[in-house]
Length: 548
Image 1 (tube, rainbow, N blue to C red):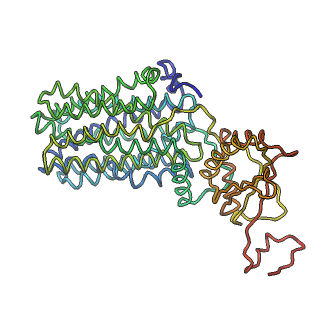
Image 2 (cartoon, rainbow, N blue to C red; image 1 turned 180 degrees about the horizontal axis):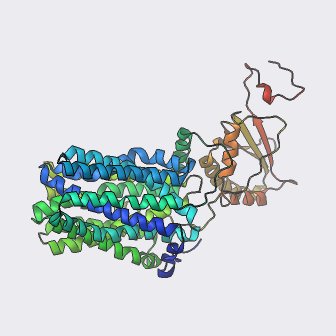
Image 3 (spheres, helix red, strand yellow; image 1 turned 60 degrees about the horizontal axis):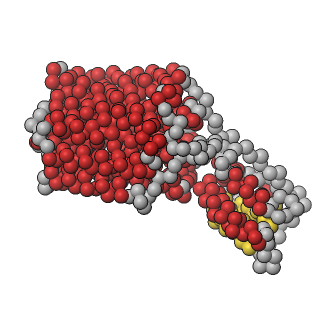
């Protein structure tokens, strides 16, 4: 295990940009993000001017994040089962369609609050498709040692754009009007479509048949739930999303009601938020050298809480800009740290699904938070909403005690080699259920070490697809222990073994060292059969005689 992010310094932080595939897609993504932020700035301000409802203003953020809650998990399964490049192209096509439709609607003068929310939701569907596929592709395009730097670069790039986009959006709104903002956003979305279409990269696909989408989703949820590192990271991210989105969701109301500002002031404050994130991104490598990742994420929540509390008290644009720079720093440090944790804790076969579950729950949390804080501001007061969000962020920081995020392990998460065993029966892929039994001979003095290994092995096997895992001890020969589990079909057994990474199989080496038998632990494969039916002809030996 390496020190946390000790390899992330300024030279290596820029190393992913040397990759000929990552660089153009990353650059095109920043151009697209710039157009999107200009468009979001225009939508938020236009909504605040044509609607008197504080809830409708807050729902601008929810409209683009709520679709991700519903679509991210299926999108992750698609990213693991199909071409990630194709999924990315489809996602950007939806975003481009939404931006072009919005620009045309503004040009024709038929824009309404619900139309803006609907097109925001359509763009959110595109982001839901693109996000898991793009982030999962980082591990395909780059070496694993460059993944943390790439994730940081992606966050830094977005926040560089965030520091420019709002101010640019405010200027465009003030001098050229919303139509120009929406038209430029639509044009910017063509750049990533061209970059992805021209770029190709190799992906190591499974030699087994494609898994059904429903089963792929089930396996992804199962793996995430059984991985303590991933489940803790996702829980922390969801809680932070509920509380932290208050900063962005309520900012238009802060500018309109407390600061008496216009679109330029709104753009300046969003730029301050982005600039704080930009500075924190380049300083994150050094922060992780002196503070653990877990504590750094907790401190980031405290910084966001201070931002909410300060903004609720001030009527000065300058003071609000300083507070928002701290909020932006906390925002980036939280999302970058959790994103990398999920990436590095996920094997390649399931990384799209774990990331999609992470995005779904965090976007769902942000959508819920936008509605909650908007409703509090509308029914009570803006000050109460901001102070309540600050208190919630302090509770999120305290959640580090119950849900610690572990350090990142430098282990091989790629698939290991597996040679299927020879069988005396001819099985079809859907033949099953398959029962697996592995026998060990363990000396009494090694029992504690053996049981510790088995606790880890149960988690490894179960999250890869094993069902009904048990450990049994022979009552007549106490030194004999049997590990048993089952898979629904033969193809599921093959998938299980293809999914085990080299790091997962290290526990097998430790068990082999504890085994006291003359030969390696004996593995028995059986197929379960009902006594009320005749076995399929394809699974009968030539001498088989059907009997009940």
